[in-house]
Length: 554
Image 1 (tube, helix red, strand yellow):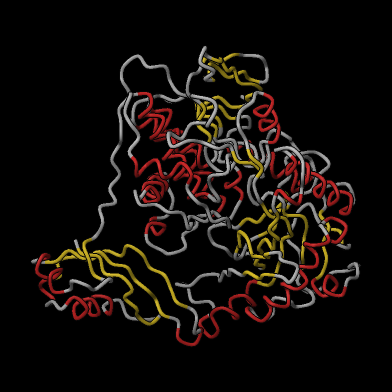
Image 2 (image 1 turned 135 degrees about the vertical axis):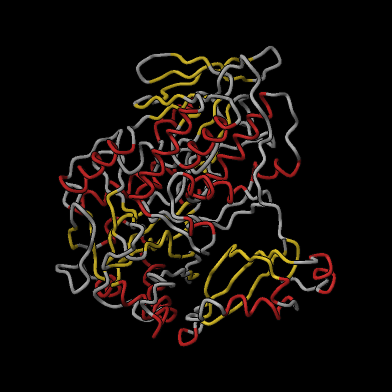
């Protein structure tokens, strides 16, 4: 198979134009092209008047060796890489089952892989099954009633269930784990297009069904789920040489589960679990995250700004954007987790606090576009111990609760008022989508001064990049604090905690992922490392590089 990249065709090209373009590019006759498959399809919208589709194709041809020889040195023509997934181990008979804590994308992909290799994992989830969890989440959105153990952050599917369902990332993935994640999602009911479109997404409703299918497969392979099973403590034994070893997990009700190996896929909001791990001496570090708001514009305005006369073309769908500005005060301001045609949602997991996030359905058909507009902060902004970032998040979330009225309404401000430094008292044409509702006010009450200054500057800069971004009646809703975990649980090249053997920190909560796909990929990496450890095999060098892989958030 030959891979051909960067093949560009007009947006509305006829179906037969693709094959017609491949033949001269490879220098072959029609009969020599036996088959072709779209591996990736994206678009180049830098010139909205003349948007181009950009293809990566895998071509089955006659005399492949001769064609490759003719194109030596052409970086856009070469052998197609082998992306087939191969299991690294098989569970031996009689082995104690490993434990996976958490059922977000990292946890359920780790559990699925372990189950497929025969390890029959035990999966512990503090929240509820995804359908019951969805009802509890709607309880906050519709009635202002929070269930602290079943909400946007806690429960089957993780925080990504109530999101845009983006399935792309910028992680390094030389072993093609991302392809494995997407293939499993398709098998579980996701649309097949996620395998080839450049910015795949599936939306909340499809994620719910997909998560249920994955659970069914894991159980069919011998895995066991336990819901309402919050891990309240870990049992650690110190050997004569000072080495610390995991020996068990203690559930909140007191039940002890013996375990020598556990994947911790806790999610970025498992604050009580982080405190427990700190108390038990598990190595942790404070890490940067970001804070800001959700900003909403009419989706049609974003479509026209990005696509010009091609706005509304079904191949393009609802337009997204990605914006960055470096403010004069040294702060980076950037768009985060942009949700085309979506809604702003209440995402708190603690009483007396307001947290925002964004969500879209697969159709992306809601009237507004929304995105996080956030400011990067570092541990220097919240001095203290390793958990000081959590205290910092809580401070601003509590301030947002008070500014919103103390009933889970969120504080909101029009862009024009925010730029002018005056509180908002009414809304304009852009109607906020946040439920259970917003209170027009001054967002400066619930954001750091440096963030407010940087965001005012960024709004004007973003308006130059995306006309209309600073329209006076665009709505900003606060606060967005759960952009990523405020801590990292460092791990070695064997993917285990650097000071506690048997603990495998993973995913967003441990500081190793920044979205659904990257979390799923990290789940595969860690599951492989655990399987190799259990079967006494060495972890290959190219796999171990993923232990400290770099992430791009948003």
